[in-house]
Length: 371
Image (cartoon, rainbow, N blue to C red; front, side):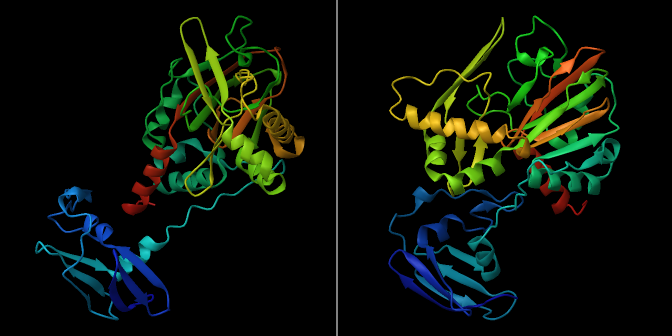
């Protein structure tokens, strides 16, 4: 076992545990009561809480505390509360809650080659599915090969990626050459790197781009690690990075039937300051209001970000052939397409899924021992 608890003491509004390695942990009394895992306070099968914290005083203190089974694998802190309730925390569980390391991300540049996985194995083999999902969570991009070239086959990915995330447009979107199409993807022009639906407050977080047939010249796919570019920008120009995190930028997409609009900073951080999302879509970006006090600073930062994501050294370019599916982490990876010549048929379909559901499936595979 790891470090054991040497001593515990009641101090103010927290219990202080001193570990055998010298570390100290403060355990607030309300936290200890709120997270009691007994059958009276929670549903043991699901860990859902039954207890409501407002039912105890805000200045709650234990009646007694003790260490049980000191130094053993079953070592625990035992707590008796004024109302007679008892709570027990295994020291190993407390240690596990002290640090939950974030999954390591692998940043990449133009020298990177997305890994390829067999489509049928991904669907049929749990170990193969876990391997792909782990790679996807680490790098944000991978390619499925030997997929059917039948329209709407993306529906088959739902058992692994979760249900399709529907948007206001088609559930499974068809991309073909169409001069009257509502966006540039339906032309033969190059499509600059971007992520989709920046016009949503919460854009889809996983995108699957399925090439059914590709007989055109050109039209190679391009991907960029947006997180990698942003981390380099944060190191080298922290002032520019900060502006991108704070100035709201409006994005809009519309058709004859729908219109989506949202204004948010180009970079979204989580509570720990880690990058959670990049929003970059030149085609759908609208004018930042002239009333924005940091407009000049924003444009200096935006110019630098645009230069970096369009640098060939940051871009991975490859050709998607019929029967290939490109999976992109929609909040991290930018994708685009080179110019093409309409010399033959080209039909691509794309659909969206959610990162949370992908991670959930991996946890299920691990917890059940299937992978």
